[in-house]
Length: 80
Image 1: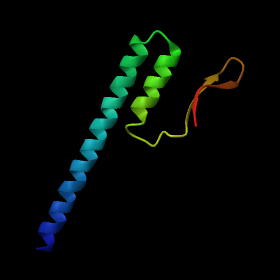
Image 2: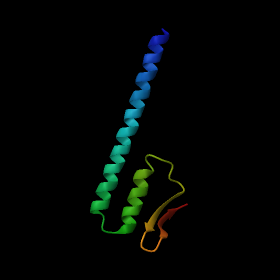
Image 3: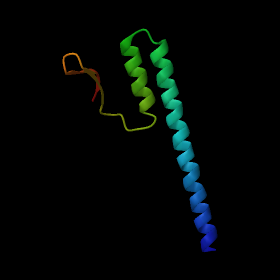
Image 4: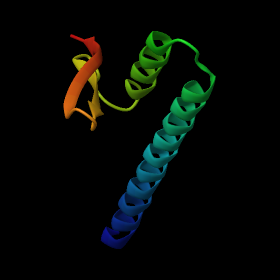
């Protein structure tokens, strides 16, 4: 009885982990597609936010860009 419960729990955990990995992969592919197809930066950043929001809590969200030539960080997209 206890071993069956442990097996069932292990299978459920593996199934959940696989589903999370598949969702993460889907979001990464979608972001790559957006990056290669969007012409406007604002549309790209909004699309990235929408995709990431399916994986994480993105209610308070920003994207930061680092410019190594002048050691500056800019925030082209902020959502609060």
